[in-house]
Image (cartoon, rainbow, N blue to C red; front, side, top):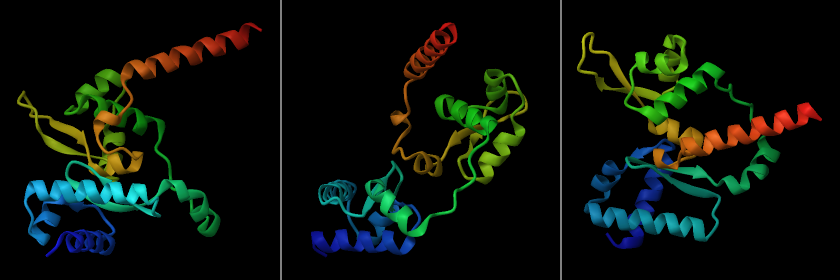
Length: 187
């Protein structure tokens, strides 16, 4: 199979699947080495971006998926006016943030940071596929260690956890916001 056929085969598999496909499975299906697969992925990603196609590749460390190009969102919304999906509650967002930044983490660790219980939020995040069990902590009771999933990355439009804002950036933004609020209140 020549290079363009391999790219076409991957594109076809991703299109038919619709869901994220493990890269290792794609590699097995088209019969290439790790290095060849890496090269094909990089080439495909560059091609889609360069040509500003309506679909793009969403690549994580473990999976690939065809997704719509965010640049064209307004046109899609104009046509289909999608139903708004239910947003995360404040407790779910706080819990998810603690997990994302501190993983692997236990429920007790999350509760220590948030100061409140988190069973409901953890349960809902697991049902949504945003978090998963990574193993068990080697202490009394062997509590579950939690971490984020590829679904979390896709939902927030990031390719890896390294793209999360640094905590110092968030703290600086909060400080500036508080300063602006105080200035307006004193006027």
